[in-house]
Length: 137
Image (cartoon, rainbow, N blue to C red; front, side):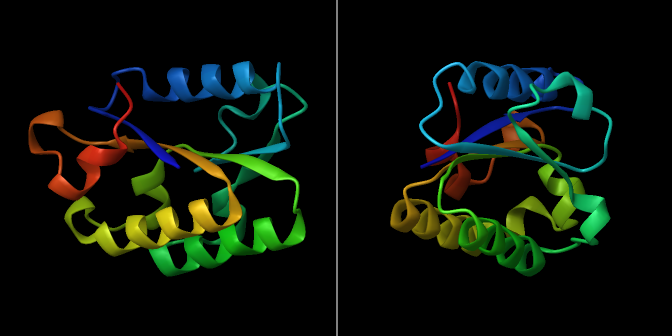
Protein backbone atom coordinates (compact mmCIF):
# COMPACT_ATOMS: atom_id res chain seq x y z
CA UNK A 1 0.00 0.00 0.00
CA UNK A 2 1.17 3.49 -0.83
CA UNK A 3 -0.03 6.59 0.98
CA UNK A 4 0.97 10.06 -0.18
CA UNK A 5 0.94 13.16 1.98
CA UNK A 6 0.47 15.83 -0.66
CA UNK A 7 0.51 19.58 -0.22
CA UNK A 8 2.22 22.86 -0.83
CA UNK A 9 5.60 23.67 0.66
CA UNK A 10 5.16 24.69 4.29
CA UNK A 11 1.83 22.90 4.72
CA UNK A 12 3.08 20.53 7.44
CA UNK A 13 3.87 17.43 5.39
CA UNK A 14 7.17 16.74 7.12
CA UNK A 15 5.70 17.17 10.59
CA UNK A 16 2.90 14.76 9.67
CA UNK A 17 5.25 12.12 8.27
CA UNK A 18 7.52 12.35 11.33
CA UNK A 19 4.49 12.03 13.61
CA UNK A 20 3.32 8.96 11.67
CA UNK A 21 6.77 7.39 11.99
CA UNK A 22 6.78 8.09 15.73
CA UNK A 23 3.33 6.53 16.11
CA UNK A 24 4.40 3.48 14.09
CA UNK A 25 7.10 2.51 16.60
CA UNK A 26 4.50 2.09 19.34
CA UNK A 27 3.07 -0.98 17.63
CA UNK A 28 5.54 -2.14 15.00
CA UNK A 29 4.87 -5.21 12.93
CA UNK A 30 8.41 -5.07 11.58
CA UNK A 31 11.29 -2.72 10.94
CA UNK A 32 10.64 0.90 10.03
CA UNK A 33 12.80 2.91 7.61
CA UNK A 34 12.69 6.69 7.12
CA UNK A 35 14.38 8.16 4.06
CA UNK A 36 14.91 11.90 4.04
CA UNK A 37 16.54 14.24 1.55
CA UNK A 38 19.01 15.46 4.21
CA UNK A 39 19.83 15.02 7.94
CA UNK A 40 17.57 17.83 9.11
CA UNK A 41 15.00 15.65 10.88
CA UNK A 42 17.16 12.71 11.91
CA UNK A 43 16.96 13.57 15.61
CA UNK A 44 13.20 14.15 15.52
CA UNK A 45 12.67 10.43 14.95
CA UNK A 46 12.69 7.65 17.50
CA UNK A 47 15.96 5.72 17.66
CA UNK A 48 13.93 2.65 16.68
CA UNK A 49 13.40 4.08 13.19
CA UNK A 50 16.23 3.42 10.73
CA UNK A 51 17.04 6.85 9.27
CA UNK A 52 18.65 7.10 5.83
CA UNK A 53 19.87 10.34 4.27
CA UNK A 54 19.24 9.88 0.53
CA UNK A 55 21.91 12.45 -0.36
CA UNK A 56 24.57 10.15 1.15
CA UNK A 57 23.78 7.68 -1.63
CA UNK A 58 23.51 10.17 -4.50
CA UNK A 59 19.99 9.09 -5.39
CA UNK A 60 18.83 11.46 -8.10
CA UNK A 61 16.17 9.77 -10.17
CA UNK A 62 13.36 7.25 -9.88
CA UNK A 63 15.37 4.31 -11.20
CA UNK A 64 18.05 4.82 -8.57
CA UNK A 65 15.48 5.23 -5.80
CA UNK A 66 13.55 2.15 -6.90
CA UNK A 67 16.73 0.05 -6.94
CA UNK A 68 17.70 1.48 -3.54
CA UNK A 69 14.31 0.55 -2.08
CA UNK A 70 14.64 -2.98 -3.47
CA UNK A 71 18.10 -3.22 -1.87
CA UNK A 72 16.74 -2.14 1.51
CA UNK A 73 13.99 -4.76 1.28
CA UNK A 74 16.37 -7.49 0.08
CA UNK A 75 18.74 -6.74 2.94
CA UNK A 76 16.10 -6.77 5.66
CA UNK A 77 13.12 -9.09 5.24
CA UNK A 78 11.58 -7.60 8.39
CA UNK A 79 10.95 -4.16 6.84
CA UNK A 80 7.27 -3.39 7.21
CA UNK A 81 7.05 0.35 6.64
CA UNK A 82 9.11 2.81 4.61
CA UNK A 83 8.67 6.57 4.89
CA UNK A 84 10.06 8.86 2.20
CA UNK A 85 10.18 12.58 2.98
CA UNK A 86 11.06 15.19 0.38
CA UNK A 87 10.32 12.76 -2.44
CA UNK A 88 10.59 15.24 -5.33
CA UNK A 89 13.89 16.58 -3.98
CA UNK A 90 15.25 13.04 -4.04
CA UNK A 91 14.07 11.96 -7.49
CA UNK A 92 14.39 15.36 -9.21
CA UNK A 93 11.64 14.50 -11.64
CA UNK A 94 8.47 16.36 -12.51
CA UNK A 95 5.40 14.92 -10.82
CA UNK A 96 3.65 14.44 -14.15
CA UNK A 97 6.40 11.98 -15.19
CA UNK A 98 6.11 9.64 -12.18
CA UNK A 99 3.11 7.47 -12.95
CA UNK A 100 5.18 4.40 -13.92
CA UNK A 101 7.29 4.76 -10.76
CA UNK A 102 4.17 4.71 -8.58
CA UNK A 103 2.78 1.75 -10.52
CA UNK A 104 6.02 -0.20 -9.99
CA UNK A 105 6.19 0.85 -6.33
CA UNK A 106 2.61 -0.30 -5.78
CA UNK A 107 3.44 -3.71 -7.29
CA UNK A 108 6.50 -3.97 -5.03
CA UNK A 109 4.44 -2.92 -2.02
CA UNK A 110 1.82 -5.61 -2.64
CA UNK A 111 4.34 -8.32 -3.48
CA UNK A 112 6.50 -7.71 -0.40
CA UNK A 113 3.67 -6.58 1.91
CA UNK A 114 5.37 -3.30 2.72
CA UNK A 115 3.63 0.02 3.25
CA UNK A 116 5.13 3.20 1.80
CA UNK A 117 4.25 6.65 3.11
CA UNK A 118 5.60 9.44 0.94
CA UNK A 119 5.53 13.21 1.26
CA UNK A 120 5.16 15.06 -2.03
CA UNK A 121 5.19 18.83 -2.53
CA UNK A 122 2.74 20.26 -4.99
CA UNK A 123 -0.37 22.28 -5.48
CA UNK A 124 -3.38 20.12 -4.56
CA UNK A 125 -5.34 21.81 -7.34
CA UNK A 126 -3.00 20.24 -9.91
CA UNK A 127 -2.67 16.74 -8.44
CA UNK A 128 -2.09 14.29 -11.31
CA UNK A 129 -4.97 11.84 -11.77
CA UNK A 130 -2.76 8.77 -11.23
CA UNK A 131 -1.77 10.04 -7.77
CA UNK A 132 -5.28 10.63 -6.43
CA UNK A 133 -5.71 6.96 -5.48
CA UNK A 134 -2.72 7.22 -3.10
CA UNK A 135 -3.59 10.45 -1.28
CA UNK A 136 -4.01 10.34 2.50
CA UNK A 137 -7.14 12.01 3.75
